[in-house]
Length: 315
Image (cartoon, rainbow, N blue to C red; front, side, top):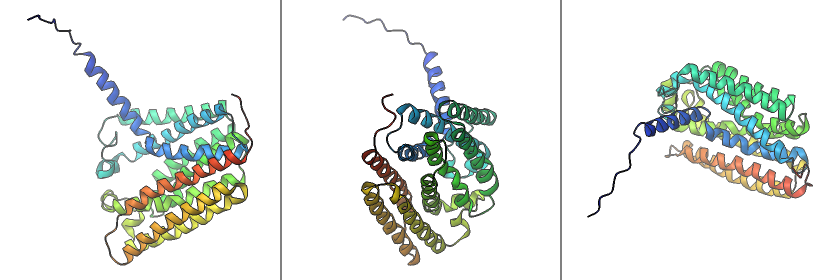
């Protein structure tokens, strides 16, 4: 039998590459990519509507890059401030700072650097207003929501959620250099969407928040009250989406009405089950809320692309 000479294996290189990938994944996790994805989904349709056509692809790309860095900065700094409660809660115990995968000082520097880079990038590629609002969103999310509201009031997510509404305004201002009424309506859609979205999640993880001492509404109020508030905010959210109808076309109107009716059915089902003390799965509404918001803004993007002339092309 012929023998085969074994190929030498660099045993030192493999662990090094593995360690680098592990550290890289930890830093990426600090930015909470899944949250960023949803924010970016709302930015592009806002830019399409603002342009009254299809904006320059370079402008869209640069706005998304700057917005990603801004959101990543806010989320990383949030992880620094919330490291203590993240370690207590099962839902967040795998986050990098909760499991000490990244030194706190490094995470703080990482978050601050991302914030500075986001301002510089947006200022250089879009305009000062978009860049300033990105920084304002970071400051509001970290100082107002995370440090002031989150541990003090059950209305934390209502007002703190305003930071998550900023991408549509930033996208609009990147195109126009100002803030139109349509941008404020889109801001309101996400503002009223946030409580049903997050309270459904908090109903599922009520014990987690209670253990961490975070007064989310499901911790301090009865399930019946929470479910009723979800229904109220859901109705306001759906009604608010219709304020954009004068600035859009039939595609947005039809799909938004259909999606809104779909969401309201699930919100009322949750409320009915809670009132009758039947088993509930609030996570269904939570996941549906993500799909709903995506559907509304995709419909807005399609409507804008179909109804308006192409602008800003070629590259």
